[in-house]
Structures are given as C-alpha cells and as structure tokens.
Image (cartoon, rainbow, N blue to C red):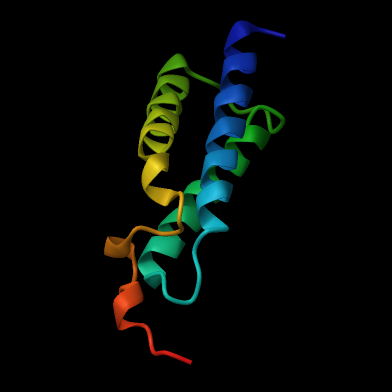
Length: 99
C-alpha cells in the first residue's frame, strides 16, 4: 500500500465524515441548495474512497485539494454547533411560527 493511497483514503474519509456531521444538522428550514451542495460533496467523497478500487489513477494534487476542503470544513465547524448557520436557512429562529 502506497503513501498516496493511504493519504487519499484518509482525506476522503475525513471529508465524508465532515459533510455527514453538517448534513445531519440541516432540516426543512435549511435552503435546498445548501443541502444539495453538501449531498454532492459527500457523494464525491464517497466516490473518492472507491476510486482506487476501480483502478483509476490517483494524484497528490487531488489529495491536497481534498485536504484543503477538509481544512475549511474543520475551521468553519464552529458555526455549525447549533445547526445550520442563519445565512443558510430560509427563516431565522425569530421568524419561525410559534406552536
């Protein structure tokens, strides 16, 4: 097993987990395009984990690019502690109808 393969699999797994952690914090109030973007990112990360199994070539640039996205996910995770940030929602909590 090469260092490239290990790095690739690790970074794809980290990306998938980071997207999963955000996606579970979305709900009906989250803008559809935000949910779609995370769905696409998670799907690509999952495909990336299967990429070497299909025999397709790997590149260090792809690993570096995915690692950069993981870094952005990690740094911005503080804004997701209470769910999707208000900018990603159709309405703010103050605008929610009271039940």
